[in-house]
Amino acid sequence: MTIEQAQHTVDEWINTIGIRYYNELTNMAILTEEVGEVARLMSRLYGEQSFKTPELAATAKDDLADEMADVLFVLICLANQTGVDLTAALTKSLDKKTKRDKDRHAQNTKLNAK
Image (cartoon, rainbow, N blue to C red; front, side):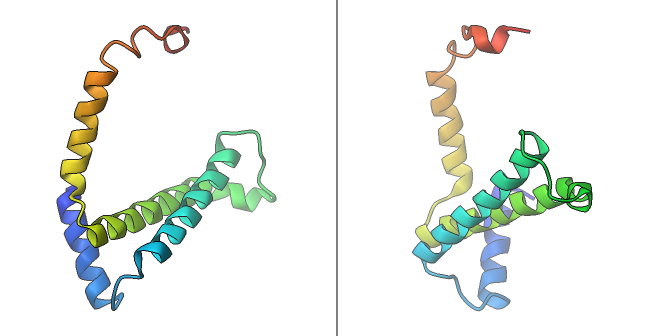
């Protein structure tokens, strides 16, 4: 699925199954909540925090994928609501980063240390 298709699919889902979009501020709060859920899992999977029970650790990778998808879904909702073409926005962002960081990362000794 392309980003454009994802935007269309989410819009169709919202307008049929979801009834309507939540307002932009509500969706921003939901996005923040979802990003927090990704952070919680990342800190346990890759950071120094531990899971409360081994059972929670067993499904954590699947849970992380679900939470990342939730973040993407809400971000797409916000893009649709505010008229942002995410394909164009990502293309522009990558171009900006490429020009700005063309030599920066290659010269970063922290990245090149093994």
